[in-house]
Image 1: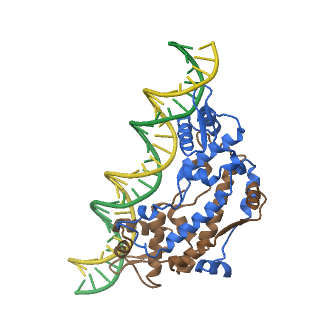
Image 2: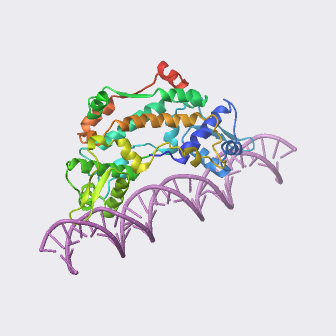
Image 3: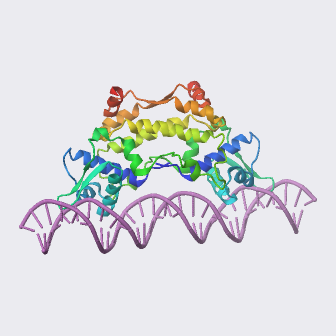
Length: 165
Length: 165
DNA sequence: ACTAATGTATACTGATCTGTATAGATTAGA
DNA sequence: TCTAATCTATACAGATCAGTATACATTAGT
């Protein structure tokens, strides 16, 4: 369960565009220099973001990139989705089904539910974090992280354990 | 941000051992058949779990594998850690630093904080879910998932947005 | 001893991911 | 029309991941 390089760098590039201001255009050259990556690499990332509808490009001599929408309307979830796909998508049980045509546990699969639970809390967090929110000091974000709690009102074995502990 | 095949299958193998009962031994042959994967593949996964201290093995004609501890004492977090490493480890800013020696954003990096936030909620969830908890019906786990909420008492931009929305 | 069933270890192949290289298309300005 | 700056697209090479193949070590039973 790791972040891909594309997710990491792609999100950074989005943040750079946001920090450049609402009407600024950034060229691939500027983006690559700001992030310390090569120009072809930056170009590839920006292409992914453009095809995902998160940035708009203009070609030609005065061309460059800017955010397709205001930074407060772009969520981290949208960015991660465009850059790296979902943690647990619909195709999942097809990908990891071993030799069988479908998952050996397809009828009763608590592990599948666990992945859904992980996806649920990650999605909640990423959905309410916008690019605008990331335009702040690390310390400010850290305060946020320290107060995060996962709660459940459910009655599963996991919930019972959590209440007793 | 995707699960690796090793995490998926490895956790499944752990769950199989738990379901076999407290004193049962399962051979590689049995595990591979149960999960629908090849014997060499199962052997590789079990080796990782053994080196991670989650299962114990016995060699020889009557050999096999069993859990190293009772299933309620093995958390999903421990399993994922052994099988796939962390979402955001200490080596992270070294891995994704582009051409620079260290991260261009090393001084003030809100994105790093976001990854820590994601890791925090995922860890909370996986830490309080044991292998024992997974030995239940999918429906029961799903009830749990439906009630999951991520809460914060923090004051970051993201938190403010969440409170207003 | 010997045999058969088992776990252990290493090397190998194909797939996917990461980053690079190169050629082309578009536009502003002279 | 020409040139320079830019974005666009595809193909490529190395690294890592997924799964396989093969040889070896260990043990119970005979």
